[in-house]
Length: 376
Ligand SMILES: *Cc1c(COP(=O)(O)O)cnc(C)c1O
Image 1 (tube, rainbow, N blue to C red):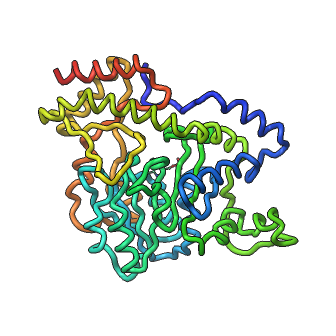
Image 2 (cartoon, rainbow, N blue to C red; image 1 turned 180 degrees about the horizontal axis):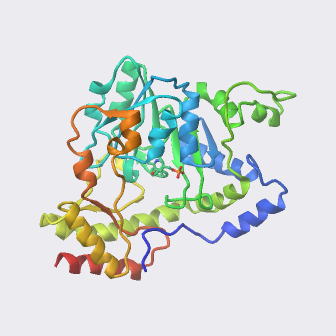
């Protein structure tokens, strides 16, 4: 069976995990956590990067940091993972879903302004497949309406928009190091990028159960106390050790994924030119990270037939999000603003192909051959 995904392994992880065990400190904010955070701060350019247990936790941290209150409204696409919405629903917010653009599956920046009310507090762009949302427009709208921007950059590590790393453009950015993402912290993990320096001090407190323990460990205060609401949003240093192995190899992981992505693109372009399938279009300003390779079929039936065909050939290809606004919780906690022109119709046509760091050339060839014989 050719799986849809396999967790990335570069080979150095075991050594680093062993070294973390030898350090006598397995909990959060150990040596590997510091190394990972500093590496990301320098490489991506963020005021403060904090490792967390997951992107879900990072999004929750963002909602706490921005003091989201019951009745506040948060604008986001409906075509996203549940955590994007849940993090704000947990604070009592109402979610206002806006349609996506069919070319990138990202929030349609031209539909955001009409969805703003006097209760709107945050816009959450989701960089689907590591392809950037139209951030200049989104940041301008946010400035004009005095809103926060939280980037769900779960899929966007090592991708950029006009030369700026995804996750560093909004006030807060959230990364995922889940095993299905480009880099993993041993299965689960995340990072909160605090890009607005005014939020840094409180971010550390919210992450440390509402205490100023981070300042205490740095010797800035002589005891630590309960200062604010918060929770436990630290990543174990054992996990950070795994992640460090991946970050050190980030460039080669990225290049390998981009090469695999390009192989699919080159092989399938003739089918797209004939109008049989659609491939994604990369806006000129976006450097993507090959997080995902998807194609769009004619409709849901065409997609089901192809999924079955590939399964016969022992290849797993999978569809993706069921739009949140049409799910039971989405109906209870949110509303769709404007017309659902593309969210539902485009999501029903989308199919993701196997793409992961350790995918062999032979297995990718098998996938491409099987696709070509289906369309023949
Ligand atoms: C994967 C993902 C998440 C959740 O990440 P976890 O680290 O599993 O919590 C959130 N949003 C998007 C868009 C994702 O792809």
